[in-house]
Length: 440
Image (tube, helix red, strand yellow):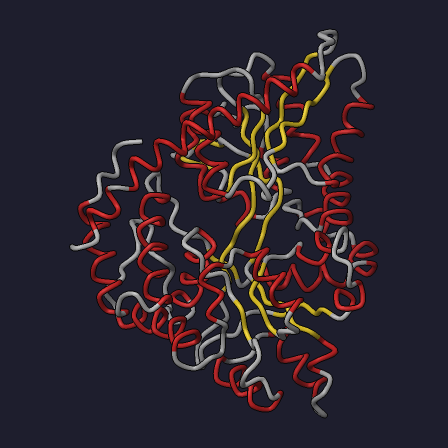
């Protein structure tokens, strides 16, 4: 357990970072309040990464409810705050029983942890409303048989590729069809030689020490399994767990399938790198193209990007991890009914369509997919709907983030070549078994 002292030292750093994050959130909130001094309507403070799609939805809602409800965005952009930093900002604010946030977005895997700070929603969203929500999206919104969240959008792990580079092969059309349905890992890796990518970035995945790496690792692990990941944790002492990490490590350290730089990549850095270096395949989430089209200078490259399913293991079914963000109403809010009215608006068909069209966010509302005319206009949404059927959830545990932090730390170290694969999994398993998961 030579690395336990190292991880224990994280507590001091985490405390210091936590203080800075609280100061940052207070500054954001105070600035927002100063800019909105009128107290005539009920003001609902909404904390999320406020994209252009969010801004338009908020504008429309405020116009409809002019004089009665005004949603005030509290922007926590991904460019400034990592997912983990956003989690700690919200947790610290709610732990202090602050009423300065009414509605907040959470990564779907945080729902069990944040449930004690959220308003129960069962009485506000009846059976008919719930029947219109995709089952796997709604699954992440309940905890201990209570509805504590409503899905804002659903995500699914996927792969992007450069169509113009793939088209150099004479059978590119057949390959493209295979990629969209999911190609075996063996066939996929065989494309590297055919495309002449021995000394160029062939496949990138986010391997920074964070949740995105855990998602990727779980996909490699679940892709070999016939049963779902356990709801009481993850067994890292299995042949499948070892094979998953060995493959990811070999991609970087032995085979040159992925550049060494992936160990510093989150999704956005992965996207940037592959666009800049003319890489051909990279793992990502659904709204990459819509997001980058708002600022990336090379529009031609973006127009040549295709969407594909992740590769799968021979003889096994394709697997992709669910992501996405859910909305929760703070139990400390002084404007709960107005906050719930806003959450209901976010779930409407019109709003869900707008979020998809402007931001590329996948709708959790079934009625969008049941609109055949709309689906014909948006073939990419047809692809995503099929991909969603291949999804699986990470274990829904209150202590999930603590376990995930341990897994990401040791998986990251193995991929960097700092520790052998077997040792990384052994130490991670030991640390998970002795970690105090009862405390905050």
